[in-house]
Length: 70
Image (cartoon, rainbow, N blue to C red; front, side, top):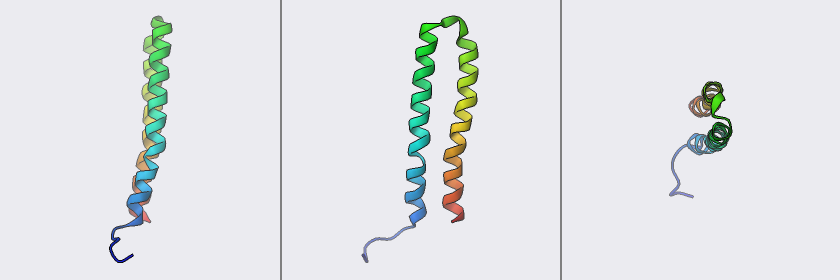
């Protein structure tokens, strides 16, 4: 194992980004599907999508901060 260098936190951050990435993909896809079905509520759906995207991005930032702290 002499050739392996680096920090285990980088692997942890890489794994921490998988969840928010999947979450954003599912959320945006479902929002687009809902807008296609009911275009009259597109404004409300878009606002809720942005709030949800912000909350999902917090998970990725927490993974980044935890990687730096530990």
